[in-house]
Image (cartoon, rainbow, N blue to C red):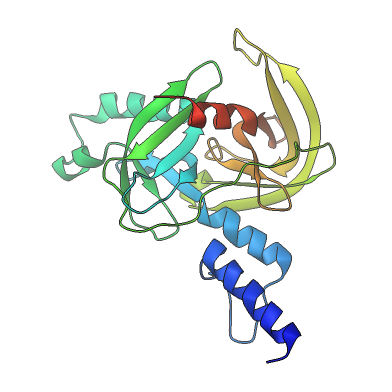
Length: 239
């Protein structure tokens, strides 16, 4: 091999280890930088629900062998699941009682979860798998540089029960507000379209880094996103 060929092979090896095998490739297709980013975003997104219903989305923060899968989401997604469960417990089939809260990653297999910790003021929650994972996988990355207005923004969630629904826009505005909370937090607005079911899913920059968590939508279906800083704070805080 030439020196250039060896460099290209090394880069491809790194991409494979980081992002896993591409899901939409066909023979002879070359992955572009944007396609690699999309694959990494989808690989760290899960649907969250109970029984046979999807209530929102989640973001994989830890996926390590022999450790629990850790998934961040919106606290109101967990609250809705618990409300649904308490009203449906008498009619739920016995086999569904063991998976009251679950995540579905790209593999399509349900992973039973339990609530790890939450902050209702931030509207954020962390869940973890009941059992350790048998293998490692990709996890979301926080950005080294805070996002700026005008940055390209990807939003992914689980509206209408679709496991990974992806839209693209820009970061339209940054504000600090209460949003119904006693404390003020930093929020981003994006013109990337979101629907019911996007809650708890991530907003990402053009590098595939997690810049925030989708909490709500405007009347025109634009996304309202809380900054990644608060999810990172919750994730890193002692139990």
